[in-house]
Length: 124
Image (cartoon, rainbow, N blue to C red; front, top):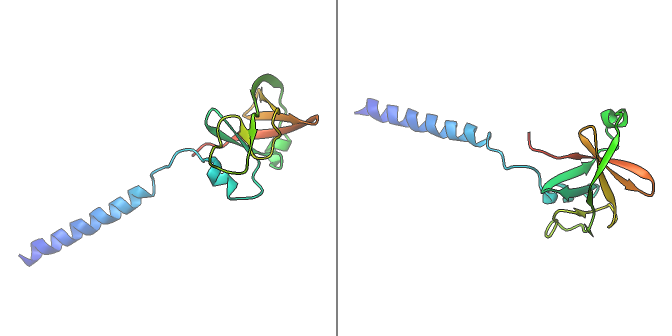
């Protein structure tokens, strides 16, 4: 009888450890504006329910050669609050800013003649 109790304990331990490991593999989906707005330096906008983040200070982006394509969005709202942060909302870009696609992974916002690159923030 003691032997079966020991097997049950080992099985429960194995089950608990397995669940712990598996829970670390669960994804919560793509990042949300709330995830970024915790950092006061964030520069984001939302398009098609995906957060785009300013990547102008990333080396590989600085070296990127791209061609600006079609207009894909316009910033319609500006806020620093995650609640109500919806498609067309930015925390830094002014209302009326046009977002353009490129022939690369980045999208471009043009503000006062300056091209600012943004990248989709997707979960792994």
